[in-house]
Length: 264
Image 1 (cartoon, rainbow, N blue to C red):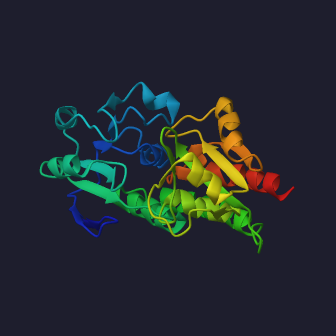
Image 2 (cartoon, rainbow, N blue to C red):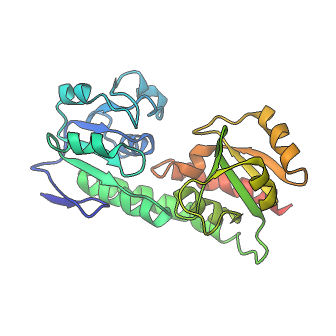
């Protein structure tokens, strides 16, 4: 059967996959939540959810540094990857030997499309539709509370040394907007690198310090507070802003709580 991935590439599968390697943490969690725990044979060292399966699956390296020999040894009949999170050269090497389905997620609508297509790809259509219904219900509740003509401005930081943030063409930016924030880096693309003076000049009302990929802690709040004394600085769970698989089931309630905090 022919399937089309999110890069509009055709993927041919003779039957639903029985040996799946996932190269993306958020999509690994999705596969488990679709009921494919027996079919998953390989995951990355960052695929920590669900934790109960983490130790039982073969680790094939990281998202950017896949151990290709380990993947070959697993003989998968499907590899699931992502355009941004995985290395292009490694994906091209793998797709010479195995079917590789690639996602490209820049907003919630892309995530919903990915979830449904993965459901079709793995013969779990009804499960994926059930997940989607629950996700959409949660985000409808979130969206109904975000109508604010004076959205507070926010700088979302994902890295330190150098400081790195997110532009408007990212999934995080879309979730940030749905939570009721205005990204101070609207108009910028991808992941802008900023120095202290540039951060200060942006004059954000909020600075959100993500738990991943850089693990910001309480001690970093003081550092940023010196740069922007008037900003409200908060540690946030990066998984709820950046994981675009079934983690979205729990993201909406987390974001609603955050939304209530900024509305005070």
